[in-house]
Image: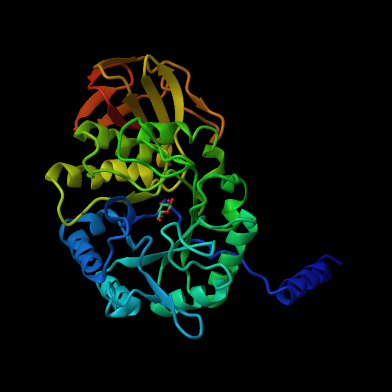
Length: 401
Ligand code: GLA
């Protein structure tokens, strides 16, 4: 009886043209680079090839940054059969040549489209052309698709993103599917079946804690975006991540301390680490932030548990993230404009409902490793006492001894 039921289900699945997302493409949060935050519509093949060269030469690739994603405005017109083409002016050799080049550097290539008729910058988007576009991306060797939500009046978000998911699956090439729907229709509730990551908010802005009002929509500083992640951590995990948007590290709107705090928090909340600065021309300090292996290890931890805010007092926040092998990441974030004093007693009860993990530092002794200074800060036998500059962090990895 049981067996015949299984056979029947398999048959029915086959008949219904079973479709799904490509599983297993993002076991840890995707890492890469995207053109939008720095270059907006000013994209071309030469710049993207130089970005690939730079990411190899400066160690970003080896630190884990894998995808080079061209955002809006790479598009030209559709051909007479409706197949999308790159702008011949900015991509004279076409996308396939660019993808081949990026692959030859040991990197992967991502592209951008939108569920509506036009992209957010008014270029041809995928509505009515989903299967054709997916086929074209597959033929070009694309590895990642960011799919936006402009000009989508009358569309149901889950259905529209599922159509593109199915189109990608039908085209046969495994492609990471990044849903860029800004959190408008609670993508965390349905996104895990559809894609590998979903934007949770409107666009990021290169400032620590501002809101920039554009009339009908706003863009947000990194602290504002961080606050909007509240209540979402249970939806994230391997292959399905909350995406608080691409990073602004190195784009000049924030101080070095703020960039470090931004990067640290994106690591703590298991955010996709998509750099958004000009990696061909950045300071040593910016590169050090982006390639801090210990911070990246917190982000890329195999358990894939999004960190949580444990406490908040006088603009000082204490965050925890359970890690593999019984380790934890701990991050004290100073949001105030003054130096903050941290004084944390490790006997404090820290229990994570989601992972059912108990820090239990009253009994288990942990060693404290400072992720940014690389110094050992003693053990949990003694309360930690430290000063944190304004808009900066003290980030530790703690391991039981
Ligand atoms: C939207 C997205 C951005 C970017 C632009 C491109 O605003 O949220 O990340 O892709 O469109 O036009």
